[in-house]
Image (cartoon, rainbow, N blue to C red):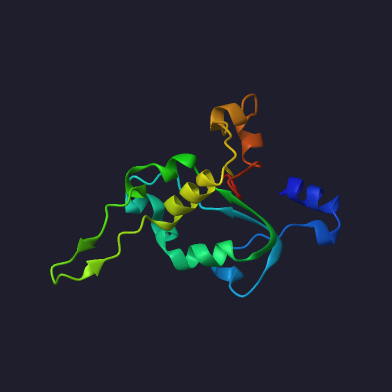
Length: 147
């Protein structure tokens, strides 16, 4: 916590970023949005959790006024659930929506626009190489404190 206080002490109050969930941003905007989808794959619907809800995705995508950065693995655009299976019908003969899940569609669209930046994330071992366990407890990972 001392590091956070130290960093914030060196910034003007207006420069301190706001961290919020997509749901809490309903009806609000910001110049810059960093949207971390918190998913690792799209091989099963359970891998994507609540992010498959296009309403939540639309809220997140429409909160920025100037710049938006989406953070999610590129493989989400090509994993098993990212493939459309064409029109299907249920037991009553009604057409069933078979769109790919929202995060998959986002990655596919950004890829088609050549707007994807690929980077390699360090492993925890690489990140904490040479740091003792006591020091590790005060580090931030994925937006939350390591306990």
